[in-house]
Length: 296
Image (cartoon, rainbow, N blue to C red; front, side, top):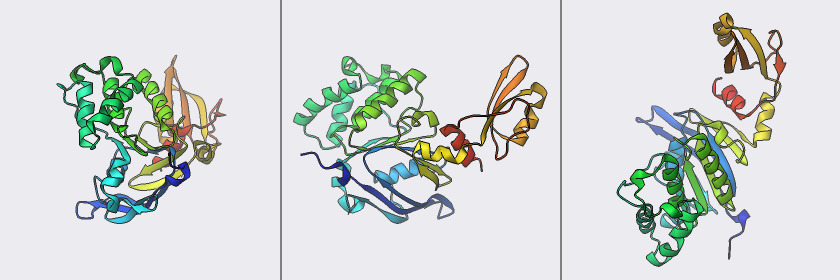
């Protein structure tokens, strides 16, 4: 019988992690609660996202703090926790001489899935990610998108209750990114899905909650709609002459500058209404919030 969705709670309590004998603070006082749905973990490179992923997957121990799943300490659960976990790391080598089918069988064996169960599960997963026609092809000839889909398929082995994905759309072209986002949304179901990225558009439309991490700290969290209220009335667009480009960058937080016919169309963030000709207020999006919060 499927466990109740409300019973699936992953709690992160006051996690801290430092490197270089405590001189480099990678994570500071991370306190979060996850229930089924998609969470977007945003942050610039070096924000602490990958360190957090490694801690959640029991690949790295925190200096202080606790992580509990359904009230149980994950470090005491050990293999029982890992059996409930699907992980797609940011970088994972796929042996080029393996076929997709061989790779999946190898990963199933590592996860302790019986060959009998794997024989049923693997073709279904490869079909889910659109690789059923390519399962006997060597992965060395796969495109970036195909490799990413294969890595998602291996993360789904054993029907995990928690799915953690570190930069799953890295290196993909726009069409592949869209297909992958849609697929993640489809498979989320009653799983806790944590999608870490520094590409805002990857998660803006599919995450029930955004967590913005910078320099090891949570600087804001909430639904997209709730978070955007913070920058409502602070985003503007106007036209400037070409020679004012440097002055504009010094004066405002510039989100975009589009050069067209000798002038720039500019999108900026400002606490006050810019005194620029033709200036209009525009609706903010998550990238505006990202710039506003991470450049302070």
